[in-house]
Picture (cartoon, rainbow, N blue to C red):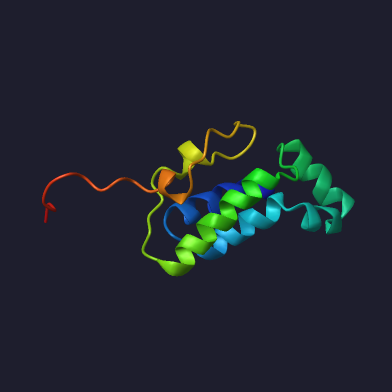
Length: 108
């Protein structure tokens, strides 16, 4: 069930799973796309999941950031990297996906 898997991987990435970010990167990778069997390609096309170098690049950047800091929580992920069929907004890098730190002292 690709639809459920995509939602799961997106949610897991939002909460800091670098493995999920890699799985999503692969979903949009042109090289991996051509190695999928025809039935999987048709199912993914039905969900508007196609090779997409920009999405692949963004998930790769997210993976790299999570590899360096596994405690990152990407609370803004769906705003800057929504799943298809949503169009991609402008991207200024991984910082767009991270909730900015509030001004002032920490609230414990």
